[in-house]
Each structure stands twice: as C-alpha cells, then as structure tokens.
Length: 162
Image 1 (cartoon, one colour):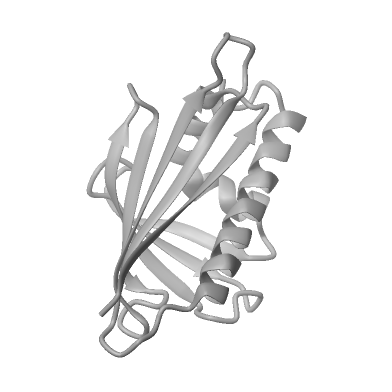
Image 2 (cartoon, one colour):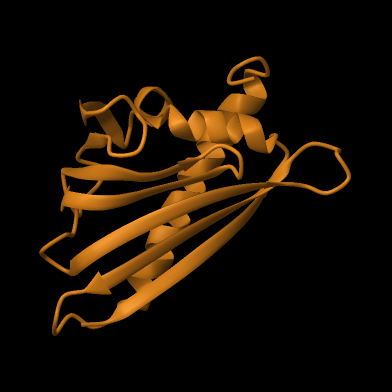
C-alpha cells in the first residue's frame, strides 16, 4: 500500500466567499456547469452539511468509472475549508483503499478581491498498486479544468453566490 497526497494551488479573481458558497452547493451547480462530465448529483443522505452522502453520476466522458459516492467530512465556513471523502465507487476498491479531499479558499491579501484555492487529495492505494504519476497529473488537470469552468461561470454571473 502506498500512502500519498498531492495539492493544487489556483489563483482566482473570484472572491473566496463566493467560491466557498459554490462549493457547498456543488450538488446543484456542477451538473449545470459540467454536463459533459457530470450527469447528476443526488444527496442520498443529509442536507449538504457534515455527514451528507452525495451520489455523483458521470457521463461516458469519464472513462475510469460511472459514479462515486462522497461523504462530506468538513464544512468550516469561518476558515472557508470544505472536506469530503470517497465512500463508494470511483477507484475505491480497485486501485485505492481510501481517498479524501480538502478545499481551502484563502482571500488574497490587500482586500482587492480574488483568492488562492488549495485543493489537497490524500489517498492510500491498495496493496500491490504502484503510484501512477501520470494518473495523478491527469487528476490535477481535470480538477483544475473543472474549477476553471466554475470560476468562469461565477465571473459571467457576478450576483450568483454573493
């Protein structure tokens, strides 16, 4: 088993609080903003807070898996941190034993708007599964691309998630 982690830092012109609110509302936002990748997100349990289970269905554009279930682990509005872990589907049981994510929004200093978004992924691979650096880079690129789609949507809709 290989324990690993990676982080992505993305500078954004969108205010941290707006991105935070969009993240908390991911189940409504992403199917609209990324219909080519996500066909739907259903809250299986909970209301979006800690303990909520989300069922994410992917379109055939995601060649690795058709769905995953995520559990919301952390909703820290004061520090703009959101965490969730994989509980079913995805690569769980095939390549990884566990996966957790944390997203933190840090306002840019100086009060000029914008923020730094830090996306961190921690994982444990299954025994005998080697670390795949190419796959990690693909995941980073996919997460960055999805973030940029949401960012563009918020820029185009300046009153949304205010």
